[in-house]
Image 1: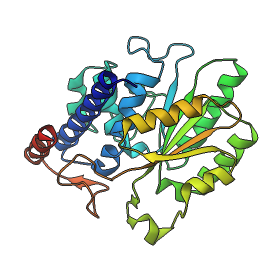
Image 2: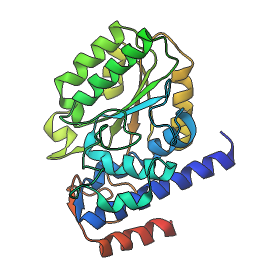
Image 3: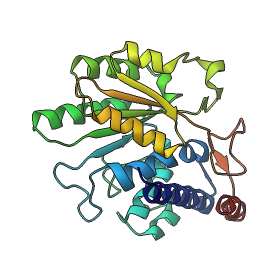
Length: 274
């Protein structure tokens, strides 16, 4: 990846973070931590890797993204608005009456959302089902999925992992947002995931582990995943929960936070000064 493209993607990631902070601040509460930690991969996917068309959200043979950690919906909406799937003004309606942007992603409401996310673990299963259907249809499209590390406590994740490996769903490229925190605290104190990359490897996946805030490293991992066609791919991303939001980054209780637009603007000022 050349420097121009990398700088562009870094700028898009920063703008996704800015829009997400403002979006949640306008509402007054939301899942800021897990939204901020996936901004870099969202920028890379929507602005470089995925074949999508904002003017034709449902076009045939498009690449599809399922954000199984559906509470990160506000970050996805920021990316979609930035890409041009819908007006940025919609972001001000997050989770309010009559909105098309509910707190969790809903494919029936939001242009560009490929799968509704509800109970943790279910989105991943849906992503694998989509991939199987695309293979039956002989589609060249790929399916990308983003999982949470807390979500990875769900047994459904590992059932899906076994299924995808058995079916050799090589058009699936999944990411785990390994920010080491979940709703109730630190992963290691609740259900320790241990060597997460080793687990996925043992489940039969082509597995890599990278810095989830290093866009060039993420892109290199995707390139390696695309170069093999034998197994589904998992990219474990080491991330920081709340990354880029000054009052949320790296603190213990940052899964969902209440804050107003004034505090949001203060955080945005810090972000833009970096």
